Image 1 (cartoon, rainbow, N blue to C red):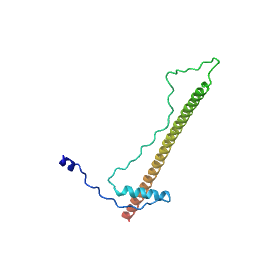
Image 2: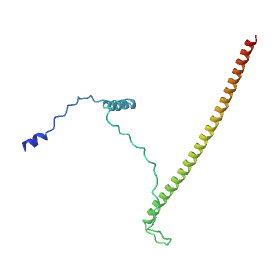
Image 3: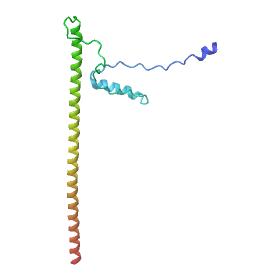
Image 4: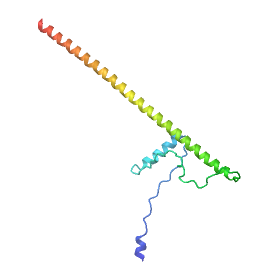
Length: 152
């Protein structure tokens, strides 16, 4: 028993140096402190948070149990149920409108990118053609100068 107790005793932890409490005065100092803390141990993994997913409304229920009738005599709580259902439906419609607008803007952006890419390729081709034409003129002039030197 004594041997098991002696083997389970942990060695003492190395004592850390006491650090002075530093209170950052602005965002730059706070970021500097965070970077210094990260760089103390570069082998340690850094937690990088995942991108938050977009909010999406709950899908409408497949089966509605409390169907409100059109008869008179609805209780006092029915208005609140109706109000919540209406608010949720308006939220869903706003979300669908926003998504449609976003998809439309994305499609327009992709079309604009494609047009810009085609225009840039046309301009590059035009300049390449001009360069090769100028090179041909220079070569022709050099050849004619050489021919004149030979003939003289």
